[in-house]
Image: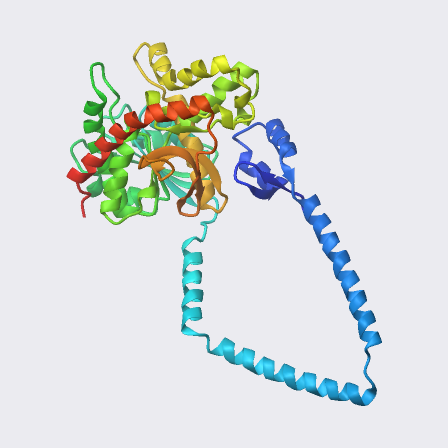
Length: 454
């Protein structure tokens, strides 16, 4: 008996209950997974019906053909003649076909070769065999992020890298995580301040499929975004430089502020080096997580089943939640939308204030980073996943933009269109564009003035 399959609305693909349950276990409770499964469209019934219909048609056709053949049955002599003629024709056709197969035309041969090459390049890696590195893994975001990635069944090897000035040695974080009841091998790498990652990280980065970068300095009182960018861009560049040398095919998930400028800078540097700029991914997932949570609380609904796309950038007014594109979000009362929009934008500041300026959103950021990391690894194993991320884009007139992207074999395989916007969202989009453009320009100028080491 063929197992029933249902379409996961998240990526549009059909899965059996075993596949579906295995993927979502650990992310949601079993009851929630079962409830979501019940909401998914069943594939089996439709296919079975179509198959039955085709079978009935084929049967009727065969019956008609048989009847026609009986009516047109030739006499013995004529039958023999027809049979001989048909045999000769078939033999000639077979000979011609064999010749064509033996000697394909140059164009066709090249096309087949190119197709095979493309297929090989997109071959997914077996699930559960990925190497992940967390650069900045001993910090406030890095430690919980490393914990969550170490629990991902797709991670076979986890590397924790940080500087000697980190709150604890990365080797200590690795030793701690190595006691988890998981198959994952964990290693720690510590570098002295002043040294270059490209001279130190060969063993750590070689063979990596995903590098998560929660690195950089936090914004201090009185520090402008430009000041912060100058410091953190150099930190990010050191890590990206090492990745370009030792794991150029890895997806780089950037959690380095200001993301709106750092991602364009690093992507343009990758481009200058002849590498794929789409490997540089700005992690804006926390904005989505917050939008889902806030709408769920406001509407009395489970945020696990809310999916608000958040587009634009990853700071202040550049953050644009598209409430109208979610079945629950679009039911928000009109007078609440503006305040809800502002709540998502200012959520980071609320956390900083609640911690009395002694910290920022570390735990929720780690959760969001792990969510994106999990989707990247699922995609690399052949199970496409859709998340919002800040990447090189042609969706708007801005060269970099946060929007829905599809992760598959190789990383980002598709950037999805924005979709339909309501009046509020259209207005906000136009308002954020000049702000985001200025921050993108800072990143592009940095890339023009710098190079990645050979």
